[in-house]
Length: 171
Image 1 (spheres, rainbow, N blue to C red):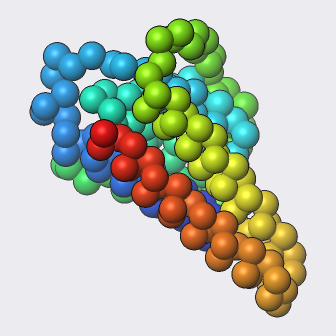
Image 2: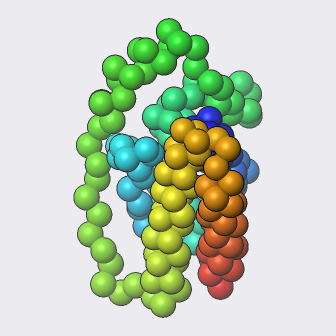
């Protein structure tokens, strides 16, 4: 189940990364509106996610490597692949070297939409934690139908929250 949760996370990262890659030409000269600290499995990344024109962009390489994937770029394709056992051993030694986390002071002039988006982001974080926790419990007890139902509910909640956030970003 941990692989499923990691795959789910990698898919989400790739969606954000693909959007960032596709929109990169139009981002030249744009102003970064906000920066967010990124946590992967409780570890903070040194590279922040940024918001430009209401869309968030996450550092695919940093997230992928911290989640235990081998990240490669060939042409315009970013690939995340499961590491071999030798690569995993060396990455576990590096995982403590995440780097400094930038300190971000909140903007006192947050708009109503930004406040709603931040509230949705907090709910998304909680949903992801619930998915990861339930997946871990399900791994220990794979035949537990109650846990399977809970996991499905958390995934549906996560999908609903992503739709809500998308609607707010379109405003």
